[in-house]
Figure 1: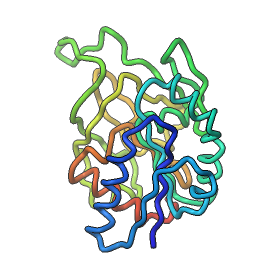
Figure 2: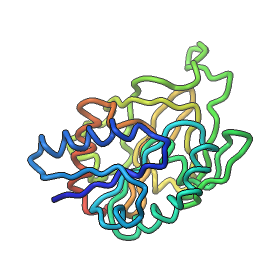
Figure 3: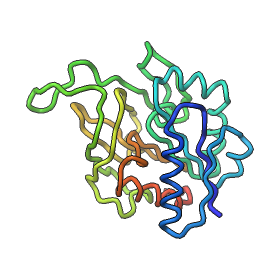
Length: 218
């Protein structure tokens, strides 16, 4: 039985993520149990961990710290595959510009920046913030979670802030929306996505299916 723990700290599309993982487990014939929990023992006993998140980073970090989720994620990263999604990805960084500046978990090197109020496309046309909808992801290096996902596949994004990192070797995918930004990162046992794979139809479900089979090795 493949046990997947979706970390519940009150800030994420937890059940849509859980249902998507259950679906790809059934479809691939992999016996899969998905639990939505903040219980450190249950998470420690899971084979794989998903760290989702939506909403303002200040509120997310307050709940993450209250429930000691940072420690739970850090422990999971040492021993099992972890998938961080959207604000879950941003929470791994060192600091975010959102809410006048918020310290994050510092588990990965990088900062979270605001797109800005004057974002434009190459023709000079104004782009709306948040970046909401489908956009292409360019795969910058190979990774097991990209298996059977064509390069330049489209994924679903909803965000006003994006990750920047000086450690380019961690970047596995980039997207352009007025500026180039990090769409996916990978470091050791963790893979992080700015987009929502559970909302990204075939490409997203393929990535989730790959996660169910990933042993945490790059």
